[in-house]
View (cartoon, rainbow, N blue to C red):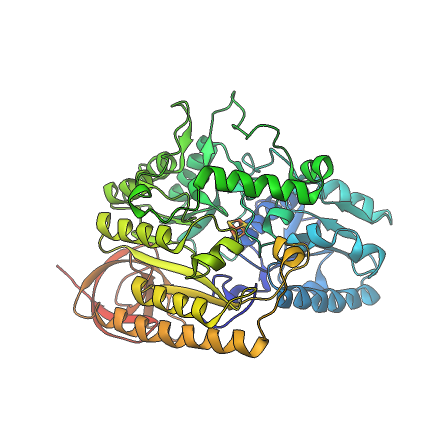
Length: 525
Ligand code: SF4
């Protein structure tokens, strides 16, 4: 997918962010590293794991690439534009080698996985290429690189979750943190590269997640966001029992080798259909599987509750949910615990069942709308956000009208809107023609953006006069006389600083708004 036009799932303000820590545990780092990150929150969280691995090897982080001994870019493949940006940055970094011949440059993440040795062999841009499951091998590869050898490790793993590594918080506000709960994705959405770059899904040890969240709380953090490509399918079977895998499943790469890619994709498509049965029967949908098989596993709903119980002062968020997997157990957990935020990111991708089927999303328009109804029935004030793609292969005006009408129905609090652009290697690239003209894709995108903006202004206006509990995250972007925080529903609120500080909870009465921000004043009593 490509070219998003409005509020971004890939936080555009953070793309290319140079990460560093204010304090390093070791007194005098022997060597320095610079790391720049692109893409989704998972990638930014991974950079914190990498920082931890490097710190143990005596590296300290710095923000100036020209002064670094090691430069790493943690990359994203989901958009062509992101890949172009990375190539440009690598070309710039290569120039530093003229003044710093010992410099090692490495590429990490999804683009490393997708392009593998191309960076080294053909483009001669970097010394290291390390995929998302191979960060533990970084110290060895760096050692080799210092001796002049180029290192590539893009092996995907069935087990790696980095559960035992305490991430070093980079560029942290000291209040909010991301915590990875799983890696990879077993879905095969036809437009998406993630199953190929991040491997098969695996859940992290629940106890290590709770311990990490507890440690964050004890360090003063007041909000954790539990991260995964599809958090609702989180499932931890315990230390002794391996995760239940569908028969014959293994590493995506192994499967590709064993079956050939087409056969693997067929197998996955059939499984999805068998399990979720693209149904338009809305009455059957709300009783979708709870995820409990065998009774002993920790499901996502269980995990949410375990983290929520650390302290009522710790807010819990999560991302991303999949409409086929989110279930009543999760909704009841949100309803039960005041500190689990009433906010769900529920990507829809299209309002047309025909296009959803081509996208292999494994649900229909009706299924999705039933999920939205159920959320609003159980948690009436729940914020809901989404992702939508315009101009997917064969999309007609009628399909597009269905997307607009779905938007009208759902009235999202936040939307991440893209027009489709083909990614090499995906199912869609191999099976369908990218046949919607660019100007049509863009025009449809603009129509969705316009509709979304109308909705969001009206939604924000409805909040004026209400009072919300806000977690203070820091100064507002425009003034140190003002603070910024978010409501439970993830809406940004700006208010006068007074004597409040980061990490405080403050009750703010909303006085006015724009389409993106609420403004108000503190309620003293
Ligand atoms: S759920 Fe679909 S869109 Fe999301 S990461 Fe998995 S394959 Fe990609």
